[in-house]
Length: 291
Image (cartoon, rainbow, N blue to C red; front, side):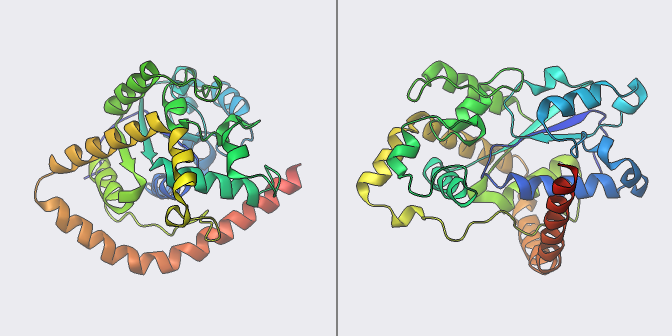
C-alpha cells in the first residue's frame, strides 16, 4: 500500500552517484499513478523542464497556491537547504558513493563532456575547485550536505572541517531516505518499502565505461584522491552504517524482496534502457531547439 503523505520529496542529487537512475524511477512512478498526473507532469515533478535552479524555484513560486500543492518531487544538483525555497512540507532523499570511485567518475565525465581540458591530469583536477561547484571532488559530498539554502559550499581545497562533517552526518540521519551506490539494489528496495511502492525497476544510464577504475590506480594516485577526501570517506562509512541499520529494521522479509527485485529488474531493465536512451536524445533535441 502506498504511504499517504502530502508534500515534496526532494532528491539532493550529488552527481555521479546513480542519482539519474534513481530519479527516473521516482518520476515515472509519480506521473503514472494516477495517470492523470501525466497531464501535469511539469508541476508534479517540480518544473523539471525549466532550465536553471533559480528559474525553477521562481516558476514554482509563481504558481497559484493550489497548483503548488501538486508539486510532489524536486530533484537537482543542489545542496541541503533547498527546502527553504520550496512550498509546503518536505522529505529529503540522497545517494552516497565511495569517494575514490566517485572522484574517478567525475574526472572521467568532465573530460568526456569537455568541461576540462583533455590533457588535464588527475593531480591538476584535484588541486583546484572547478568553475562549476557541481563538479567538486574535494570532500564534495560533505559540501553538498553542509550547504545552506541549496548553495554548495565552495570554501578552498582542504578547508572542509570536522564541524561540517558532523553537520553532514546529522542531516543524513534526519533524511527520509539515504542509499549507498555500492548497494544500489538494496537501496532501491528500501526506498520502495518506505514509500509503499511495488514494482520499481530501472535501466542504468550516464555510465562511462571508458573511465579509469579504482583497481587501475597505483598507490600514489589512490592516496592522492584519499588525501582530498579523508572526511568524505568518514561520511561514506557513516552512510553505509545508516543504510545497514535501516535495512536491519525491515526484518527478515527484506532479503526475499531483494531477490524478487533482482529477478524482476533483469527482465525490466532490457526494456527500460532503450526507452531511457530515447528520452535522453529527445530531451537534448528539445533543449537545442529552445536555445
